[in-house]
Amino acid sequence: MTMKRGWIAAAVAAASLSGIGTSAVAESATLKTVEERGTLLCSGHNGSYFGFVEVNDKNEWKGLDIDLCRALTVAILGDPDKNQIVPLSWAQRFPALQSGDVDVVIKATGWTMGRDTELGLQFSIPYFFGGAQLMVRKELGISSASELGGGTVCVAAGTTIERIVADHLKAENVEHTMVSFEKTAEVIGAYKAGRCDAYAAWGPSIAVLLANQFEDADSHVILEDKLSAEPIAAAMRQGDEDWVDIVNWMLAALIKAEELGVTSSNVDEMTANPPNPTVARLLGVDAGMGERLGLRDTWAREMIAAMGNFAEIYDRNLGEGSPYKLERGLNNLWSNGGVLYTPILD
Image 1 (cartoon, rainbow, N blue to C red):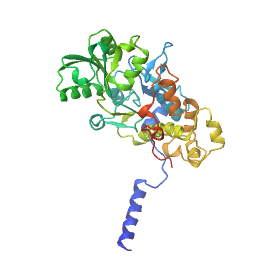
Image 2: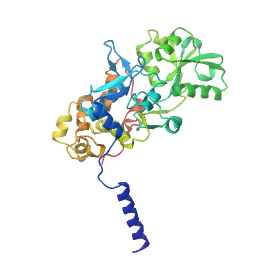
Image 3: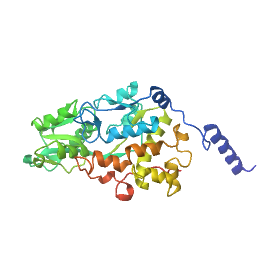
């Protein structure tokens, strides 16, 4: 046996021992718990984070992140309503995840090194992008964060925004006072009441608020300074890689469906006559989409039929089908000028 052949044989043996290259059914402890409980526990908000996690006038949960929870619920349990939304503040979301009070955090959560390495969390592929920005009253005549010297900035406690804004203003040598609030509604109320000169938040959420929650929207301006470029992802406990796979491929399937033109209205037709092998795999016409995750082969088909693809979910919660009319921008497909893409579905 030559050295090259010996190396190949050793690699094949190692792959066999590790399960690489073999057909293995996923065994997620979290999945087992959810299936036995019959309910998926998802993060909510202690109030409304408009467009993402909010409560409507019928006291029902809605929003982009809520719909992603429902999509995951369909993938696992076959029914978008078999979930419980647990109201949590920003600061409560990670302790609640670590204690098992929720199974996954899907709540406009930024992927950071500290959360990844120090809090025992794992993150999914990003499904949204946005950064920290500041809103001020036009009457102040401020056009840049560097002009906020001596001002007061209101922010929600327990968010990445708090640190990002503080670090940016420190780097710019801008003396300021940071005032933190537990609830988003309290931050907005303080800003409206004039208790602070600037409102610091995630750029997309400021745009949503300005479009729907301010009667005097023309009296405010979102500063051009983009203080961060933040990938938003689902957060999970470390140690359950198969659960991370399930959440990753739930998100990937929604984005891939948009890319392939599979919608809630044509999914049955696409299933009956798949236009290409990728669609056939996605919709479970060809076996394998489920077994590798410990789910049904039809999970993605059922999910798209119930919730739509990513574009449909975005549109009804943030886009033209919503009160906010927020353009997708970076959050469009890579093929449409955005940055959203998925792993290869083979």
